[in-house]
Amino acid sequence: MDTHRDLLIIWEIDFEKLPPDYRSLVNPDVPLPADVQFFEVERTWADVIRTLLIGVILIIVGIALAIAYIAAKRSETDVSAFFDPWNFLLIGAALGVLIGAFLIYSIRAKVQIINAHQAGHSMRFGLFLAPDALLIREESGVSVLGRNRIQRIEQDAQRRTIVFYRPDGAATTPQITLPDQLHNIDLPMLWERVQAWWKASPSPSI
Image (cartoon, rainbow, N blue to C red; front, side, top):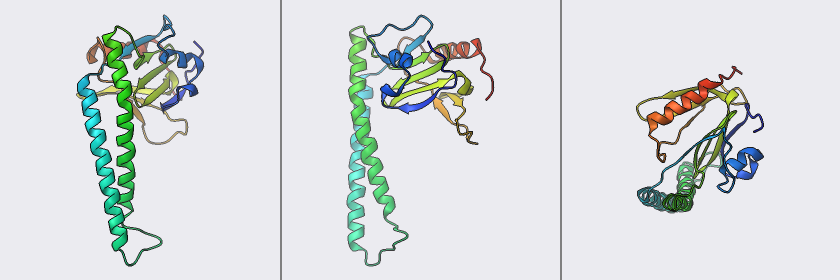
């Protein structure tokens, strides 16, 4: 596998934008290289129902906010050209509909994961530990963190995160959360595997 120690891709939806060797990792028809560890996410029908309900609720809330915005604008007599106090309703409406629609769209992938598990197959959604990078693929997209981009790994009582460097050198400390629902491995064991992978080849500071 080519060297991608400085690679940084965050929640990319289009897999075609990934480097070819990492694109092949998420393809169920291509065998995984021997030096890549893969931990697949676990999805249940309860997850599907929960996602559907949240998506529908967000869309309904978004539509309600849009109706409230229209009603407010119609009742206005003096509209400021520089500040519209009702814009927050329009922004909330757009966010509600977009996020709700995205959640409903993600149900298809969840169902595919469930059906694949029941048939003894893999859809390649989960965590990949490659020699030079860590890759996370979930329904919302795929992220790739090269070893040189990872600053540290952290855990608390509820989640396990990877803190990484941004190319622009921003003062903030961006981070990404590891998947917490995995097939045939518990979180403590996953954490041990990630730590072992990280310590196997320490990355120099940027």
